[in-house]
Length: 369
Image 1 (cartoon, rainbow, N blue to C red):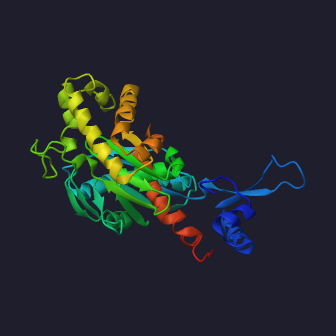
Image 2: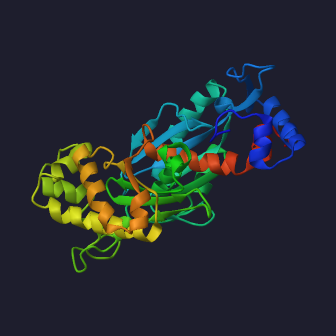
Image 3: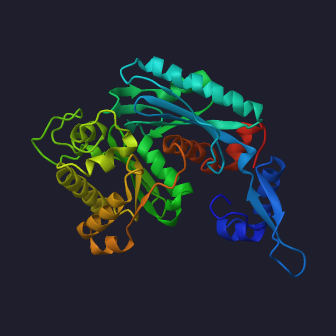
């Protein structure tokens, strides 16, 4: 119902391969709990109109927290990834972790109070963090950008908010949101590039062999022996193509981040750093084989000329069979993509993957499905 819209009981049975009796039993409980609604299909003209079942997107929701490079963003999302107001606050990456968590907790309580006033039930919390996370999705193992190591974010936020928490690498979470709710639904796999203080990427595959993973594209060495990188390497792409080096070649420390790529394109250094970007992305596409490359962060605000050049110049560098199906687009996620990614992770963990039984028991203790 999330992916296809309203469906009849017969169509649900066909698509899920659950018996008609099983579908009827499950739908009865989902309907009584308010998670599913019914509507008649008006285009039907002969006999009694069939009844279609649809997801009540506002029946419950999740809290989403994005801990970016110096900014926390928090919002509540419904079951279809529609967001309420985004609350945000700045922090310094050098601040103690407890202080940063306190900032995000304060924002979260404000947002949860608004959700409580609107009678929206919260299933759980998703958190997007910079850097890798452990397999249990509870610990931020290492963030090169922030300098964090082995931070148990899930435990800390569960203790403060009283809700289950799942964390994910931020660019990977955004890639998941693109694949589930954005234009990436039309592709089986996407690579999301996110330009900000650093340069990150996430890979999401929703077809056969479904998986998602971070892609440390910013730390590919494009100029071995080049300037040292905070990751410990030398000549990494991020040392040439991220906020700080772009500001340096533009020579305007006050320029808005949204205008950085456009300004950099008019400098003498652009051909070199653009070549580094093409070199890295083409290798990544060749290895991972995504059907879509999605441009996010400050790449999303790059001028149309950049998008046109990138489409033209990347295609000849990948395998012919990849070239035929590869599309390069701007992000289709509205607003703050980081919180959308965090919300997607929470929805997958606490609603769509967990299934109706788990969700109902969390909302209505004692219920079964």
